[in-house]
Length: 382
Image (cartoon, rainbow, N blue to C red; front, side, top):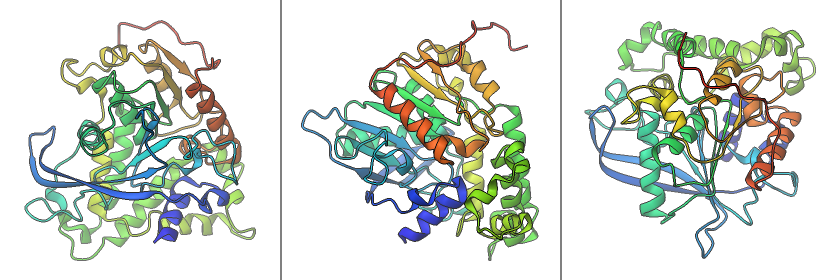
């Protein structure tokens, strides 16, 4: 089982072999919520939230950090940030901190279309928003773990979406947030991309509107290839950086074929689609009282923010991060200088990993980081 999860993360974020061999062993937990009301108004009689913990909560209860998961990830998705004998430069020391890693609804382990009984099984499972996920985790932290305050929320990708939402929904609950390769709102281009990937799955006749009798293999393979094309930067492909994590004699065709057949092993089609809908619906501006205005929501953030977009991310372009940073009061905008596209925000290359850990460690310690200059907020969208 451990090998399966390590393989999944390696395939999705191209983490290094050193990370896959991490000696870290989290404790797995499951929190049960009854009559959970979603933002859409649907009431789910029972939902399960899977989460992991590393280390121990100290007597003062002030050493907890939340690490919310990204797309289809498990509770082991942040070991690239953790200090180990093999990587002593890790920003987060499980010996000194209490690290909580939550799993998004829809990943196949927390409540998902694939594991929820009727009348909410499969395509009838409601879309759960980033706020739904954040609210459920807040209940888990306060009611089950009795954590009244967090040192930080640190998130990559959809985890970054959650970090921003935490700072808006629960502004005094944490000391600071870190967002890597992710934005506070999904803008039009990101929605079009996600809809294209959903269409790749649903175009398979076997999908049958989500009530498939067997996995829609052709659709899942098409989804994997489309996703792979967006995952890395154009320059990454031109320089053939895929060779750095492949067998010496592997060809480009073989690399693409490997991704086609082994992108997210065992993932259910409805689960994949559910999390894409969660992703594309994200907007901190839809938090009650902000009327859909992400600018007002961002301006409400009180805690320091370390905003680390990947300089070459095609999912969350650095220009979106620059736009949002204008409205955040206490922001350090520090792009990751990488050709690895989206996965740079999860330490895809050794250089990315070192840059992230060094920067995040300094930020958590209250040191000054010299990021990009942030321009004045604009009042018009045009």
